[in-house]
Image 1 (tube, rainbow, N blue to C red):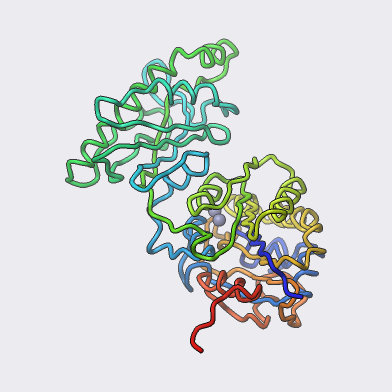
Image 2 (cartoon, protein in one colour; image 1 turned 180 degrees about the horizontal axis):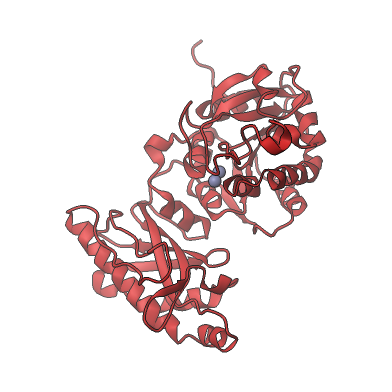
Length: 406
Ligand code: ZN
Ligand code: ZN
C-alpha cells in the first residue's frame, strides 16, 4: 500500500541553534519528544532550506515556497495575505493592509498601541466596514477583525497602488502619521489620500461608538483609531488544486498562514491561538475525510524563539509532541514534519539555518534516523533539499507525479 494523502505539519520557527541553558543543545535536542522521534524512526529524514541556503525567510515567503509557489514570483507583501487570512475574499488587484486598533487620547496622541488589549472587535469592525464611505473615490472597502486588537483592511477599485506608507508611528506619545505615497505615480498619491480619509472616518465612527464609551466607563482604553501597514496588491495565484491536483484545507491559528492557504484556494478552517492543540489535531484529521491535503501550522514555538525563551520553546515542542499522537497511526497519510524557518532563541529572529524534515507514510523509504532534531535529521537519507522540492517529493511518494520523458 502507498499513502494517498498528504499532511504538511509546519512547526513554525522549529529550528534553533545551541542554547547555553541546555549545555549547547537546541530546544529540539533537549526536548523529550517520543512521538516525533517515532515518526523520524519510521520515515525518511533530512534538512531543508525553506527558500534557499542563506536566505532568512519570513513565515509568508517560506510557506509559499513549501506549497510550491516561488515567493520571488508570487509574494506581494504581507497585507493582502493577512486580509485573506481574516476571511476577506481577496481578488487580484485589491490592496490589502494589516490593521491594528490602538488608542489615541484627547490630544490625538497614541497612548496604547494595543487598545487596552481589547479581545473582541467584531462589533466596532462591523461599524467601520459599514460606516466608512469612500464612494467619492470610486473605492469600496472590506474590513474584518482578527485576533485581539488585530484586523485587516482591503481597498477595491480602479487606480489604486500599494506604494503607500503607514500611519502607524510604532511608538506611543505621538500622533498617527500621515500616510504618504512612496512613488511618483498618481495612483500612489490617490491611494495615500484614500487611506488618510479611511483613517479619519474610522476615527469619527470609533471615538463615540457605544463599545468604546463602555470601555472608557470601565476604565479601559478605547479602540478608537485604526493603524494600517504592510500595503500590498493581491497577486494572481493559480489554485493549489490546479497546480498539484489535490484538494486541500489549511488549519492555522495565524491569520498570515491561513491567508496564504486561502489565497491558493485551500479551505480555511478557522482556529484560534487559544484552540487546544489536540482539538486542532482532530480538525486536521476531520479534513482528511473529504480532502487530499492539509497544511497544518502550529505557531507558538516561533514566538518563544523571538522572545529568546529557550525553556518555554522546549516545553512547547513537548506539548506539540503529545498532541500529534493521533497522527502516528495514520500511515495512509504521507506526513511531512518540518519548520518554515529557524527562529533561534539566541538570535530572537528568523535565521537561515535549515530546518529538520521528516517524511513518513506507507510506501516511503525508511532510513536510520530515530530522533527529530536539527543534527540527527541531517544524517538522514533525504539529505538536504530546497523547500521548492518538498511538494514534488511528497506528490511522488503518493504516486501523483507525471512521468518526465518516456
Ligand atoms: Zn514562521
Ligand atoms: Zn517569526
